[in-house]
Amino acid sequence: MTLKKISLLKVFCYAAALIFALFCLLPFIMVISGSLSQEADTLKYGYGLFPRNVSFMAYKVLFMTSDRIVNAYAISITVTVTGTIFGLLINTMAGYSLSRKSLKYKNIVSIYTLLTILFSGGMVPWYIVCVKYLHLSDKMIALIVPYLANAWYIFLMRNFMKTIPEELNESAKIDGAREVTIFFRIILPLSKPALATVGLFIALGYWNDWWLGLMLINDQDRQPLQMMLRIVVTNVEFIKSQMSNSAELQRIVNQIPSEGVKMAVSIVTIGPIIFLYPFVQRFFVKGIMVGAVKG
Image (cartoon, rainbow, N blue to C red; front, side, top):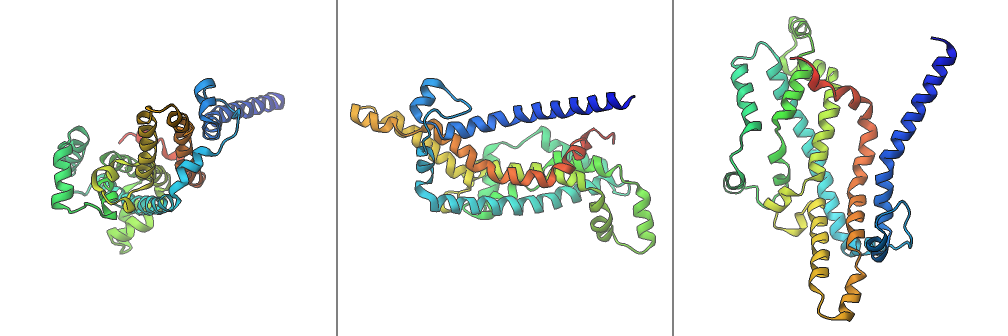
């Protein structure tokens, strides 16, 4: 292949990457534009790349209770960081155990783990176990514990760790290393792509979750960010649907940008994930293929 053909190929690749990046950014730009648009413009013209009349009313409505949002932000960050660390540890240790040939009854444990994907006890038994037996109601730990172990992540880690040669374990044992030392000093450093991929999935799951807040948290001061913002959006829509008896009242209520609030909520919640992804993206492309490894 000549130098000229290679240069043309590079130009084509860069152009394709630029076009792809633009198409990825366009929805995000439209969300920002929607959060800054007036309600009347959104209802009349729909969403666009640029707001016709810039308005910060959606953010004013959203941050009317700024202290609660800051508190919910702190709760969500704490839950996400803690849940990701312990979730990675539990799923990785389980995956490592199932990947080793020396584990007794490995097939039985694998089938039992797989059954949790195929079958569920149902919402009511799950709620009774969490509240009555585990006493997770109105506690920070209630937002963490139910999602710590995930069968899909366990099998993902198992498939990746099957590619790590058993000879490494055997040579480490000959040198006097124990299983804990082998796991933390040999296996984990070699599993960075899988750890980054699973860690990102776990963090996204915790950050975007509002279900546990709805089911297990009654105290408003302990609600996570997603649940609190969901309440804000629901209240705005309820007010707009009920206040229709008076024309003057309807005019005032119509100024509440319900569509803009939804877009503003998206902007507020997406921030930490945007900052997280650059730190793991170099591992993500390699780690996303771990499920395709034949094991």
